[in-house]
Length: 352
Ligand SMILES: C[S@@+](CC[C@H](N)C(=O)[O-])C[C@H]1O[C@@H](n2cnc3c(N)ncnc32)[C@H](O)[C@@H]1O
Figure 1 (cartoon, helix red, strand yellow):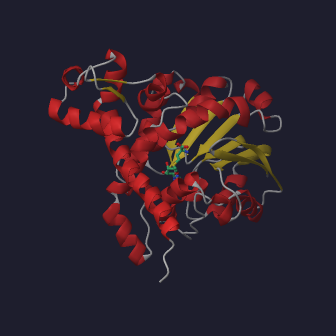
Figure 2 (cartoon, rainbow, N blue to C red; figure 1 turned 120 degrees about the vertical axis):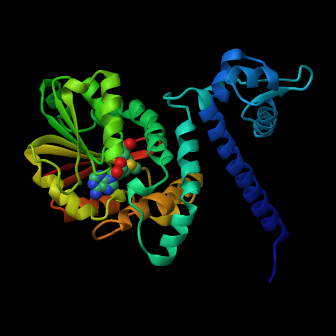
Figure 3 (cartoon, rainbow, N blue to C red; figure 1 turned 90 degrees about the vertical axis):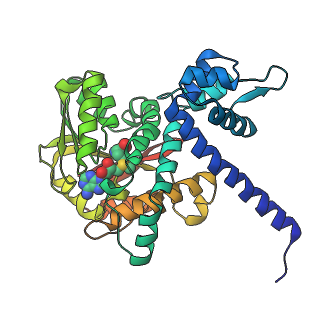
């Protein structure tokens, strides 16, 4: 075996950075849940004792956590004063939940993937699946927190305006189904912007639907939102003017059958908006850091959820626009086009 020393060094360096990052993500999730970043950004330059007291945590653990965070560049350390602080950029990434730059939802989602290790090992061997509801619970909140800023940034500003005539229709009324809505963040954003339209969120995972109802109530949109526990192949037909599926079709076992069912629930002049993770059509288009992350989620989460359902097609989270278009055409949609792209998503528009 001939080993190229330069390549070996380059690979070892990259993997070492990933290993440090894996610990960084774990500690970042801990810091997020314990409110350590929030406290540090609030009280400013602090010793470990001051931060521990402010966050109600043990000083010795906090001191070690701060050292790891400073080593990773997640917080700043001043050797002269012995104090730690966060720059505005660090505050944005670690302590500004809900804002587009905040990555706390990703820390939660990645950490939850590690928690399902034994189940993942079992299905790799058996070829079986893991239903969404059997994932570790922080997967559900992590998913909502991860997607929320992306939807808040693009859904009203770019995605709906990119659909032919939909914004006008919803301004005047209309019915919308959000299929596989999870904790309903997308539904709530749309319902707030289009108070004359009626929004129905469907998901087969009961705790997510309960969460969606709570989020809708807190956002003051309970009058024009209804959340129902339902499978994507069996939700109530109401001649929808718009059906949306956000980051969920690839999780489903039978995307063609479900898209076919969705088509049957729509008004003949209606629109399907399919939002899926950003990906190129070929594997080689997706071989970069974002691809590593999304194929990772897909391996641990999406593939397993799909394989737990009827058909178990396992499209994967990096299916790409051509494959997704094929799915919609096979389901009977006549007019499918790529309507928009954003940093993390592609948006397909289809007509029945
Ligand atoms: C990755 S999450 C996305 C949730 C939500 N759309 C969002 O963007 O936050 C996928 C969702 O699809 C739901 N799901 C998967 N298979 C389903 C099915 N057959 N019927 C209904 N919901 C399903 C899961 O329960 C989960 O809430």
